[in-house]
Image (tube, rainbow, N blue to C red; front, side, top):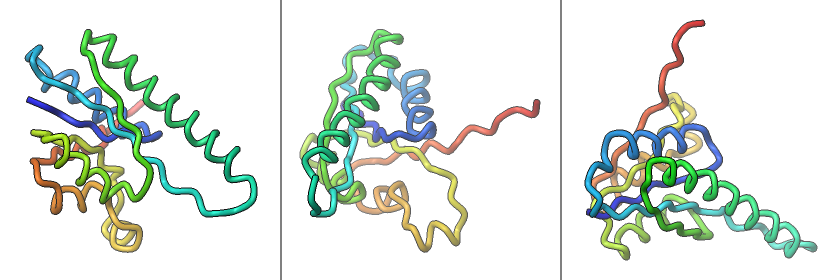
Length: 142
C-alpha cells in the first residue's frame, strides 16, 4: 500500500499525519510519502532570495513531519512540488500510483469554502485514488 499525506504549515496537516501514523500505518510494507506544495512566487525583483526562503520553509515543514514519522519508526519519503496545490496533489498521486491521499480539512465554513476554494474538497472530487479528509480535532474544554 502506498499512502501520501499532504503537508503544509498548518497544525491541521500535522494532525492528519498524526492520525495516519496512529491509526493507518500498521503494516510495515506501507510506503509513506509526505507531499508539500509551494505556491509559485509572482515574478518580481529579488525573487531568488524569496525562492530560497520558501525552499527553506518547505524543508523545515517536511523536517517536522519526518520527525513525527521517525518517532513512530516509520520511514517516509518527502516530495516538494511548486504550483497549485489542488492540481499538483491530484497529479502527483496519479503518477506515484498512490492508494490513499490523506489531507487535512481546515474547517472552513461553507461561505469561506465557496470563496476561497478547498484543496481537500477539490482532491476528493478529482484525485484518482481514495482521499481521506482528516477534520480538525476538537479541543477539550479547559
